[in-house]
Image 1: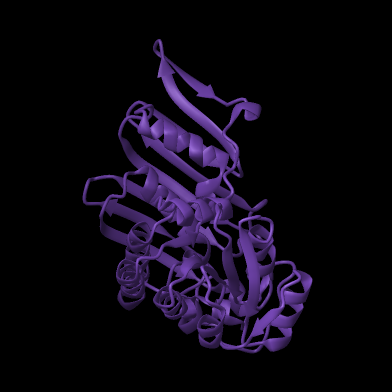
Image 2: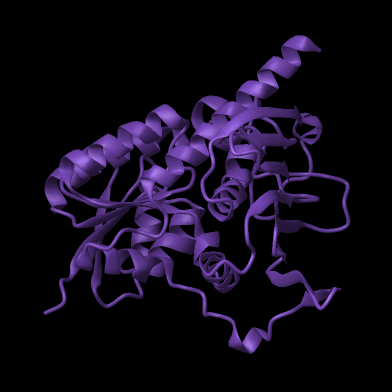
Amino acid sequence: MEQILRYACIGAGGIARKKHLNGYSKLPSVKPVAVCDTNQEAAKRLASDFGILGVYTDYRELLEREHLDLVSVCTPNALHKEITVEALKHGCNVHVEKPIALNEAEAKEIAAAEKQYGKQVQIGLNKRFLGNTILVKHLLDTGFFGHIYHTRCGWERNSGIPGVGRWFTNKALSGGGALIDLGVHYLDLALSVMGWPEPEKVSGSISNTFLLEGNRIRRGYQSSSGTIDVEDMANGSVIMKSGQTLLFCFSWASNIEEEIQYIEALGTKAGFKIQNGKLTLYTQLGGSMFTMIPDETTLPLDQNEFQSFVDCIQTGRQPETTVEQSIRVMKLIDMIYDSFVQWRDIN
């Protein structure tokens, strides 16, 4: 008989409503039993909307009383490590939203707890579960691209600041701005397609022009009077110890035509670009360059991020997005932020 997993969502914000509870509540092998948030009214509303009886304001009480198999962690980034480690200690598997934590050191603490308590952690990097990404991974594994020697990636919004003066713009709570919020997705993809190389040298720059002006707010998000000490744009370059190179640009707000998300990789045999969900391949055949666009009706289907993790819990299979991979991502993000500090000191 298939195991029914007792599930709770810690955090009652938009990502909990739109993504985690929306996903797990549809799975027959998952029984949502509780919602937890320090804002009791928000927790009550979310629980009521999904027909869930349990409501908590203290995640420790939740973990002690409910005997859970699985939790989502959908809180501000500063709480990811603390709650994930405590949930693992209580015998829970954890689906933690991106980024895994504030930095590499915290990610390593999660890795140690995952190993100690014998449970699994999946990180909410949903770009990995898209059909285009799955096809690219298959082509990489079969050697179609050859050696990937250069990548370029970014997520640039023209008007997309997630509120000013909220936890997103408070470095102590978020770990940073556009880089750690948007960049974590595409730096993860870039390192993945490059074969997880070690970064050696990083340089970059940041700005917060639009944050200081208090406009360009993403639709549906509210502002408050809190701290503003993060970047709304980050760009730069990375040289890996392997000699591979990476260029990146991430922004919550820019004077551009439209929002754009992209990753482009150059290999010795072929290259690819995924831009706003469209995959294009580039290669040389018979001495001529070819641009290839796949028939979208034959692309792999998007994987269900939530069912995938449930399958991992029930079979022991490793999650698609692992803690060890996220340690590498957070190490790179730490190095990029350190390079920004050095740049400001020099200039």
